[in-house]
Image (cartoon, rainbow, N blue to C red):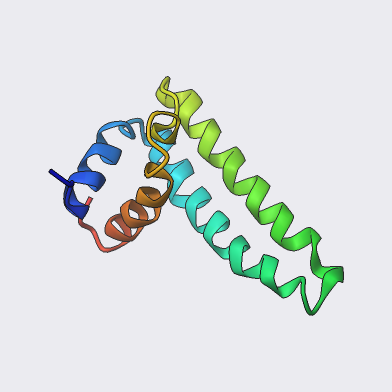
Length: 98
């Protein structure tokens, strides 16, 4: 049976309990998300390449730092679909639903 969006977010939340990890994901996820469309900007403005690269790398540094504090590997090591759950978790967190 497929999981609902709420089930994915619940599972994601269960592996993100440490306050530092939550903070790191709250900062890191939007950095990664913002970097992705900026990579498309490189088609028109190749000189801006440092910005999306910096945001992308910094976002992942936050993610892995958080998991170091949590003491657990990222969930996407077990299931790649968790790469997309992080964004839904972040949106739920911003809305006060996590």
